[in-house]
Length: 386
Image (cartoon, rainbow, N blue to C red; front, side, top):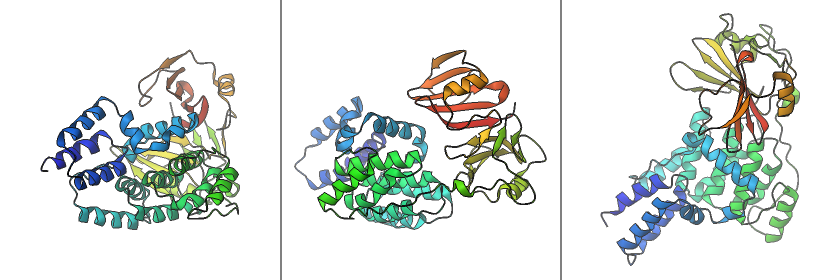
């Protein structure tokens, strides 16, 4: 069976979203010595020709997802692929796998956002039942946190396939964050084979009737984005009024202005919830939970401001995250045209509405405003200085 490690490397690379099932399938192959090598390679050849066959076996209930759930799952896997792709364990022994699992469970409590995300998605890849409890504990924490960690934990529980957390997962169906809500629905479908969509009452009633583990508690959890406690006035050193002025900034947080550096941002907004380093000296400072914004910094200046789905303020033009695209057009002008593109990464032409599937991107260059959309609704807004 000396060929088996090569098979494992190949299969892990080919089906990078289905690690748990691949590992379990490989164990089955190792145990069943009657399966011939030729059968394996025929199966692998079929995988090379198309991933749908693998997808159906790995997630048998995905055929019960509705259109919104399916599109959202595909969108997530596409936009966060680098974050979710944790298939680097082809040569690990079982002892190494066990050690990695223990370390990842420990790192779920890391104070660093990046370490938490890596640990969550590694546990999803390993696919062991032992991880589902700690992942649920991480997701259920009602304190302010980056909801990316929360929805990734919910996604991981669905991938692991242990239905012992269903009763608790139902409470995420009414969470204020759309990513959390939809991944709760998707994971519930994958774990149960049922689909009650966004009707958490129906989910709860059905699960109570099943008398399954982790019984559903009908008492509603008070999820909150803490919008009500967002201050209009920050510490004495500066102020923030939650109105973003095009080509200027957010209150005393100015774009491309030497008077606004990292130290002054800390005085005005407080310590960031997380700092992600990308290329060169560029950093992404997250104030996602407190203010609903992220700041891009480089050369000790603020280069851009990203207004996220829970941003409670508005642009100086009056446009908010809840505005329609027709309202955007009435303020900034109709697009000069539309264009389907292979990727929305990088630059796009001025005032041309570029789309990829259900996602879109529209830049108004002179105002320094870029609208990112999903299903023709504003998903988030990127603000920079001309």
